[in-house]
Image (cartoon, rainbow, N blue to C red):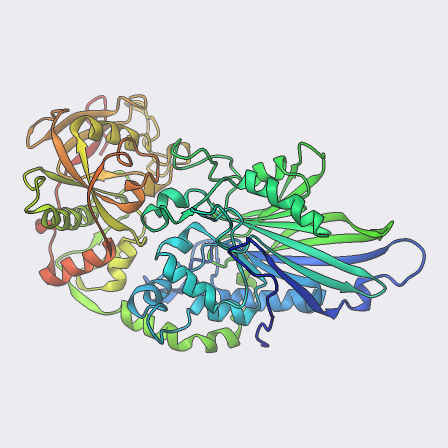
Length: 598
């Protein structure tokens, strides 16, 4: 497979310039009608992926096996590469564009390894596997995702330098100058025999929630205004520069809602808002929400024109195709139609060029995650952790408590009780009796979160728990209980439901939201609202992720950059034996009118 060979023009983060390229080859005769009666026509196909999250291979590092699921999906850029080559063969390579909508360098042990274990930022460090794969496949441009910032700006900039395509972020601004810190756009010309070239502009937009979720890395350095306002500024500029087609690659879903509440004046999932509010956009590649949207048509409120949106399923399971038909009339190209569709990576085999290219990196990571760090006395699982107090989640809170207690020792807060939050991230994680490996613990804590200590009162913790309890669907006493329908009320994901250790409480799911927490105790007595606690909390939650009350504004006592996952591995390694008697406790239970559900 030929590698991507391009030269960038007009790339300047300081001035906010974008990237302009010119297609090297002319379109085949089939793509442009001969000079005769009627307008000349041209067909362009824009391909897109999103939320790759480090998936190069169809491999589950947590299970040490090929990835499988009930729906028969497959994953990985090696599959996408095969699909891309098929499309290029069908449409003509010079009539295609390949984009991504962000969240590239975080999400698997592969990406963690090259950020932390063998970091790309080291002197003479490696080239990031995602850069290698995406360069080889021939991506034209990639929008920044929020998870691009999880390892800090230095890692992101190093990854950027290794990519032979621009990382776009029109709304990722330098906090001091308020100018784009990354190229806002990418522009490419597609040559058509007998007609002027078709100019295609790609505007990249990222998520304003970065200001909350990765506050520790970006505060004072970068700022992230709303997608709608930045698109409204840039789309007319792109049109004035001669863009015949404008495609937006947006790391933002379509729902028009936010997971971080009212802490920012911007909408998290704003892609459909952009389509409705900003004239001049033909198509939007949607990301961030991890949903599958083959085609969504949105009418622009000002022009009445249709904007076509599509979101391919995450982890390289799908490839979006925007087929764009243009006609050259009265001296200019006009978009006649846009349609979107998806192709499934389970219909093809891996591209052997990609598997060969990254075989060594893959092998290193497999060896790393299979390191034995201890033994488990019994099998621990998250299968019921959403609705029962599971010992495996208690392991997380115990580790967090121990780390924070050591951190505040010797300070004025040393005498305060330390409690901890943790979420049931996975429904399938299991630590089997016997040898415990890094991949076992990684599957338990799948995010690269770090630990923060916050000062909270009893009243604030009570409100925190009430908010968390909104996760459960209200279920009357005596009504049948279906555990598959008991949780995720109003679409709340599992990672936005928290246990809190060190307290005793009941969650009465027969009650309305806001009055579910019953019999809340600390140390055997009713909780004193004035009592102060040190809450050991992950940085996502501490910065406001999930919009839990009080925690983002609470006084921060301590924080660190070591991942919670690493702290769990260190704790297990030091113990040698993973025995529930060292960490498990029943702190909470579900009830209905005081009667236990289970």
